[in-house]
Image 1 (cartoon, one colour):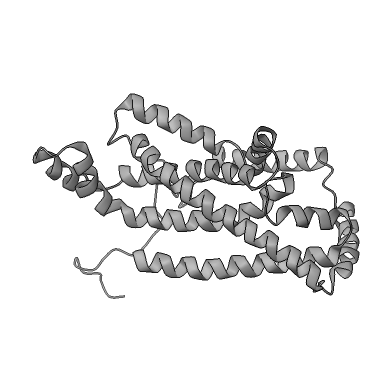
Image 2: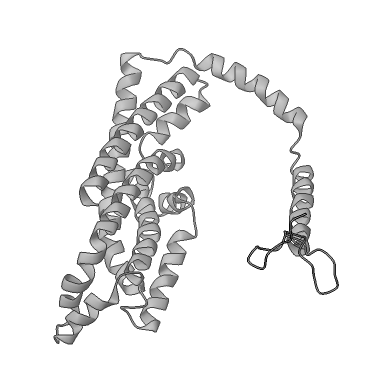
Amino acid sequence: MAARTGSEPPPPGPARGGAGRAAAAFPPNWPARLGWALLAAYVLYAATKLDVTWARFVTGLGNAERFLGRMFPPNLEPDKLQLISAGMLESLQIAVLATAAGIVLSLPLGLAAARNLAPAAVSGTMRGVIAVCRSFHPVIVAILFVKAVGFGALAGVLALIVSTMGFVAKLFAEVVEEMDPGQVEAVRATGAPFLNVLVMGVFPQVMSRFIGLAVYQFDSNLRNSTMVGIVGGGGIGAPLFTAYQRFDYDVVLTILLVIIALIMLCELVSGRVRKVFQ
């Protein structure tokens, strides 16, 4: 056997610990294992408490088959299509108005909530306002406004304005906090007032992201406008709920297909708009 020279590396061998035992490559993480085990146990417990069983699921498949069978073919009668088109137009108008008003209110709210622009007292208060706006689903807010202003599109518009403020203002404040502070400090060093600092130092860095948030929120408002109508907030939600209560499942399918088509069209348009401002 040839002798090993001093320049050759030693043969590979098992890593040894201080006590002479092989060191584990991936030591067990017992706290993580315990956490996963507790989570699995709670999932099983919650399933039993909520009566989530395989038998109910199988029964639901049969009911869904009968339900879908009554939905086809979709109802394309002229009077039904006219009612659906009027409801969809109202939902579109609700989404446009709510997005426009919500964006206008979200811009100053987001700036005031940014900790690198506003004093701690102001930013903390504005973040509390944003948290309140984000605390409830638009349907719940729509119920409150229906009680306040009555049935109709106004309640839906107000509910979606609150939803828009909660979403856009929060993300916009985070975008402002993540911007490069050098440009802002350079404008401040010239002695410019706060409004000029915003126009010259802040807006050029964040407006493209703000426009992207606005376009995304319009998509969300268009979907939510079909939901708030179920509780009396106007739009296509009211005819959808009425058709469901009357067991006109073919009309329900027609409304769902129209909603899907409108959402897909708006997705295409909003995608083009986001590419323009990126």
